[in-house]
Image (tube, rainbow over all chains, first blue to last red; front, side, top):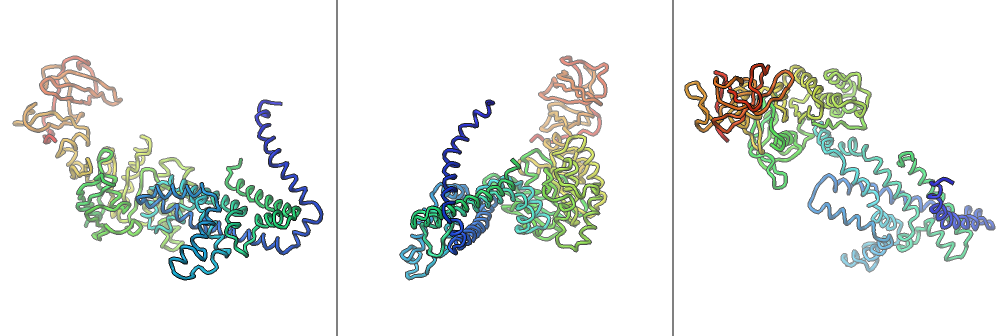
Length: 259
Length: 332
């Protein structure tokens, strides 16, 4: 064996022991009985798949819009305290995601701050709707889009913006034609990462507990922990893993620099 | 007719005053160079005209119209910057067409072809900026600025990023462009006196955020009004003294006698001002001899064609000043 192979052995063993081996059991468990056909033909699975994709696409779109806007403001319109705002947003990245869900409960719940301030019930069923899940995911994942964009904007040559403006381009056209094409890789990377993470998001969905929002991770939890249908839980888990891996492959292919 | 008018323009970066009560007019078809060392405020003045920064006070007019509060996209000036600032993801032709969004497609193509031909870049229309050399990129940047036929062209150190040989070529190109655009007012920011002398009808010399002197190019070169302008434009020798009855009186008066190195002669002791040779540099076509005057604390630089018969380094010599063409400037 070459020297290099020796260096590779420990991490490969770790991956095999703690990830691939359990994954093998998950796959094997999913193959017991008629779990696959049961899950595939159940409306509940298809609903959950649809909900998962819809919620994560909507949340990602929201993150892209909000994250791009925030990055633009923070990078190009210097105002006192911009650095502080950037650090605050960074701090958000350090929090567990369910904390956002809890905060939403205090803000928008029936006894929450918004209703208390209004003096009557104004939030309606917002807290238990898919919109609330999407809003919470946007709140939590926006920094994942903003961070790489901010890094790319910070290095953007000021002269290009100036010259573009002197050529008659309004700010929106400067952004669309000059800044955005250069920021695509950063935006793409942030957006794909957000899509990947929102597809697998569990904490926010569980804590908000919106009644119509059953995503794939929730379905795994429900099958495995609530109804003790372990084979079915494993089927959904395998599908979830396949979905994540294929998205990750696309992400690496598009932004991984060909490695 | 005034194309560019700055009156009492002051610009602050935070607490620093980058431009202080600066006034300058550029007539239609005229080229004015803003000349000064780095940090003298010359680029700031140009940026204020372009609208890239907002003056703290003062007024900026383009063709008589007050544009002080207008954003850059409504000023209609062409701008070329030192680092070209081409849009990297656009082809050369797309870069040039960027400012032509408002005109019909066929006419746009025609205009792009016309300005690319003007700067000799027609063959490169389909290239990307990164496939071009620095000089080629700057030509494209100039074409892009000219595409919309602006009446005002602002050039901010356009040749500073190029190497010496290319700079000389491009200087010739800019002279030709200037002839081809007789209606365009050009404000040319540079720290290089050679570029200013070659291109400008008038030169405004700047220092420490202020205008020092401003006059027609030849006038400013031959009769500099201040010691700073005399040394910055043409690297004149400044010898403390005055001119009395057509003769130089060294050490006398409150001024400097100002003389260019190429007009100074060096001879054996006895025929002029007593001095000692302190150094000799060979510069190819000429030798630069530096001398220390004996009667007054001053260094004199002289450019001579040959060292034959001249005293060597450390030896006594004399400095011979020309009989005409000397000016006296006040001490700062």
